[in-house]
Length: 187
Length: 307
Image (cartoon, rainbow over all chains, first blue to last red):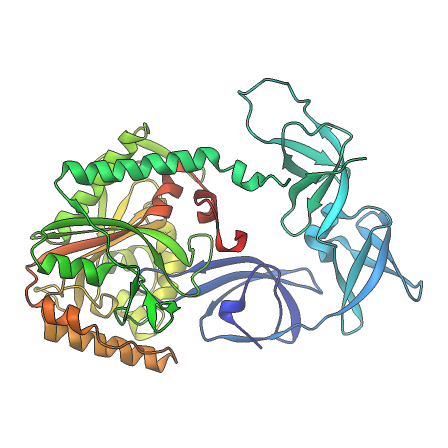
C-alpha cells in the first residue's frame, strides 16, 4: 500500500480498478496549510490522462504489473512490434501506451514489456541507452559566447541538450529516466 | 574521471544566487539590523498542525529559527535577521526541498503592515543590487515590480477568484484545496501581491486582529504565483500562545502526527517581548523568481537526490 507521500513521477497505482501511472506530480503546501499532492495520472490501458489532488493520509494499491523481457523489432505507423525473448511470440503496443519510451526505442533494443492482467500496456527501458545524433550544430573552437549546452536531434527524432563538443554522427548515452545526455560513447 | 554536467550547468545561477545573498545582507546592514545565528538543532519545534520536524537523535532540526529569534527580541535585540538552513519532513516538489534556505527578520515595534513595506523595499533593493530592472520575466510572463504592490485580503481573494467563500471553504475543510487550485494561480501574476488577514486558525503564532478576532494579522507575499514570504504581527501573550500550541498539538494528534512538547523557555520569555513583527522569506524561491528558474532544483548546488 502506498500513501500520498510516496507519490512521484512514474509510480504505478490502481484507481477505480485500473492501472494508472503518475505523469505529472506537484507537491504544494500553502503557507501553514496541509500538504497537497496534485497529480496527472495516465491510464495505462486507454492512455487518457486525469487530474487528481490527494491529501497526506490518502492511500493507494500499487498496480502490480508483470514484466516480460522482449526485444523491440520495428515500428509501423503508431504501432510498435516486440518479440518475447522466451516464447518468440510477437506483440504490438500502441504509441500512446509507450509514453516517453518511444523517444529511446531503437531496433533490437532489449526492454521489459509490462503486462496488466495479461495485456501489454507499456514498456520499461534500460536506464541507459546508446543513441546516435543525426543533427546538431558544429562546435566552434574557442567560441566562448555560446551557451554551455546546445540542442541535438537523436535518430528517434527526440531533441535533447548536449555539451558543445559533441558532433553530428556521434553515439551518446542517454539516461532514459530523465531524457538527459549522460556521456559520449567511444567507438 | 566523471564530470558532473548538471553541476556545470548551474555555474551562472550559483554566481547570481551569491549576489542575491550579498544584496540581502547589505540591505539589512544599511538598515541597522544585526545578523544573528541560532542553533539548527533544537530540543523541540513550535507545535504547528502541518509543519513536521526531522528528528536528530532525541532533538530536532529546526523548521524555522522563529522561537530563538523571538527570544532574542524579548531580550532587547530590537532588529535582527538571519539567513539559515531549515528542515521540514517530507516536503519535496518543484517548489520544496526538505532542506532549504530561509531568511527571517524581526523588529520590535511596527506591525504586519510596516513589514509588508519593508519586504517590498528589500526585494526592490536586491533587484537593483543584481542589476535587474523593474520588469522581470518569470515563466514567460512579465512581472512589474514598480511601486506600489497590490494588497488584497484573504476574504476578498476568495470572493474574487473562487465560487467558494473563505468561511465556506473553512466549513467544508477545503481551504487549502481552494487556495492551491483556484486562488494561488491568480496571485502576483503580473505584479507582486500581498494577501493578508488569514483565518485565525492559520496563524498559530500571530496576533489576532483587534477589530475582527476571526482573522490573524498575517500576510503572505506572492510574486509570479509563487508564495515567497509569510509575515505577521507577533503574538506576545504567553498564556494565549500556550493555548494555541495546545490546539495545534491536538490537531496533530488527530492527524496521527507526533505531538511536540511545549517550548517552555520560549513561553517563559515571551512575556518580556515588546509588540513586534516578524517575517520568513524563502531564499531559494526568491532566487527562482529573479533568475526565471523553472524549479527549486535549478537554484541550489545539490538536491538531496544528487547526494
